[in-house]
Image (cartoon, rainbow, N blue to C red; front, side, top):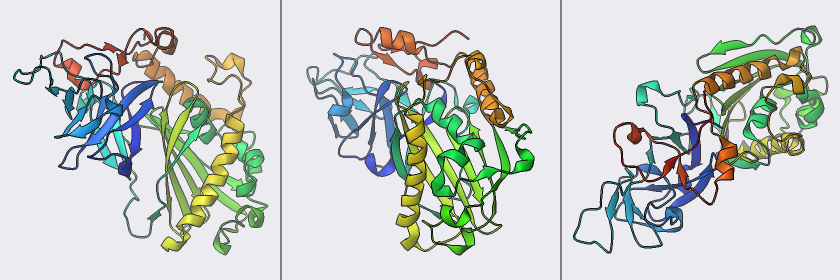
Length: 370
């Protein structure tokens, strides 16, 4: 798991001005709330007074209130009131980490790291969102009982579809491509590929959609990633009938992942089809989850010598190469130390504010050496 990337924190409608929203990402707790101007804020969920959970408190006067002693913290993470010192300004150390936020596609994202704005890896843009000729399904959020790298690699693996996805017609890679390494293209902070799939059971695979225009013998499809946790999948039945799917993944810890799924389509645009297409998407997702939940080891092996990889795994290899680049920057969380000291030390992902001010109470999350 890595700091210094954008992570989905909550669906937009879960973040409110009258109650805090509590969640866990990267093995640590966070709290989100809105101020009266509608802006969403994301803070570390540990009160620096006596360790109370801000997410278990309430929101008042544009601040989240700790339920233990009533200390209030504004959207910038600074304490605004200490009830036992009502006439005194809170000390400078009375602050918690506050993270940059973007709200897009019905999701509240937070940049969980301390990089200045001009150095941050990007939050992937869904260019089709809100554009004529495209329709977005209602945001779908689901949990996967697997490590997020395993989930990401599953999405970057074209050869599993034939065996895992009868709901899609068990599409298999075009015979001419079977023995060739995937043509994986590098993009900023990631990679992508497109291949042709032979959909010989097309009628069976798209029966759930009941749309004749998707009953095709060959489909162009592929996937890509940006950073360690943002994945895109393209499924093109024809020049006019397409799915573009976006998966923003939030590692809950090193065994569980929460996926925020945005599905875009160019056909069946009437809203009456949303539920049906949403159900089909969840059926396909469950097929993947059933496999991922049983993988051994749970986490991706540290070396490829512990697996036998073949040419169709090229996109997975490129993804792992990118992870090594993030390792070299010193961004990987030391999960062994984090777990070993759990209950003894309260950690926080360092926020950008730590670069411009000192006197922080919570320890920065332990990182592996570059």
